[in-house]
Length: 441
Image (cartoon, rainbow, N blue to C red; front, side, top):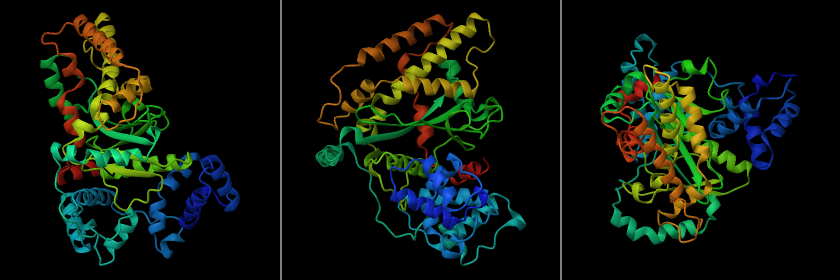
C-alpha cells in the first residue's frame, strides 16, 4: 500500500477526471475512491483532494515525463518564480503579448533585484516553457489595446448587459469585489490620518474578498488577505485550522495568483453543486482569467471606470459589511475605555477576523438583494422588502458609539465606513518593486 503523499501527477490528474465525470461526488467519497483505485495506505485528507482539484489545469498542462513523476521537481527559487508569475498575470491583464525571450529577460532583471547572485538560474531556451507549464500559462497572442469605457458607453451598452443577465436566474448571478480594511482605525480624523499613514509599518490593514448572488441566498466564504502567513495572534496555527479562508503576502494585496486560486475554487464549488453561474467582475489588474479552464463559472467583466455605478458590491454591500464591523470595533473601544485601557482601539488580527466573519454573516439576504436592485441592472424584482431602515438603525448605533468616546475631531459615519484609502489599496496595480516585496512573504 502506498502512502497518499506518493501520488503521481498522473494519478492526481485521474482524480480530477474522475471528479469531472462524476460531478456530484463529494470530496470525501472521492478520497475513498482514490485510496481504493491507487491502493493507498490511508485516505487522502479533504485538504489534499481540494488542492489536487484546484491544480487540475497544471496537471493537464504537463508533458508525459512530468506527468508520470511522483511529484513536481521543487522550484529552486520560489521567490523568483512567484514574482515573475504575478508580473506575467499583470501583463495579461493589460493585454501585453509576451515572448519567451521577454519572460527570460524580465526573470534576469528580477533575479538581480532579488540579489540571487551566483544562485541565478541559467535561463536556458527551454526554461520559459517549463515556467509556463508550471503555472498553466499558454502561448501568448497579441491583442489590440483595450480602451476604457466611460459612463456614456455603459448607458449605451446597458441593454446588451441586461440581455446577458437575462439568460441566468437571479440565484446564479454573482458579484465579487475586494476592499481594504484599516481595522484599528479610530473615528477621530486626526488619529485616523496618523493610523492610515502608519499602517504600512504596523500591518494593521487587511484585504477582504466578498462575493454573493443577486437574491442574497448565497454569500460565499470571504477570503482574507493579511501580511503574515501565521500572525502572532494565530498562536502558530494556520488560517484554515482557525476556520478562515486566509492568504498572505507582504503587502496584504490581492495578486493575480491569489485571484486565480479563488476563481478556481469557486468553479470547483459550482461543479460540486452542479450549477452553471455568471460572475460579474471589475477590471482590477489582478483579475486575470486567461487560460483558466473554467467549466461552471462564466465571467463577465464590467467596462473600466464604471464599477462605482453598476457593481453591486460597490453599490452598498461592502458598506453594509463595514457598518457591522465598525459596530463591533466601537463597542469594544467603549468597553476598553471604561476599563481605562491605554489604547482603546488596539485589537489583534484574529479577533478582527472573527468580527469580520460575524459582520458578513449578519448581512441579510434582503439587504444584499436590495443592493443589487439599486444598480439598475435587474428589471426583475429581487426582493420587495425595503431594508434601508435596518442600515439606518446601525448608522444610528455608530453615531451613539462615537458620541460616547472622547474624540476631539469625530468622523461622520460616512467617513468611518467609506475612507477612500481602503479602496485604493485593494486595487492598485503592483509595481516591480512591490512584486519583489510580495515574493518575500
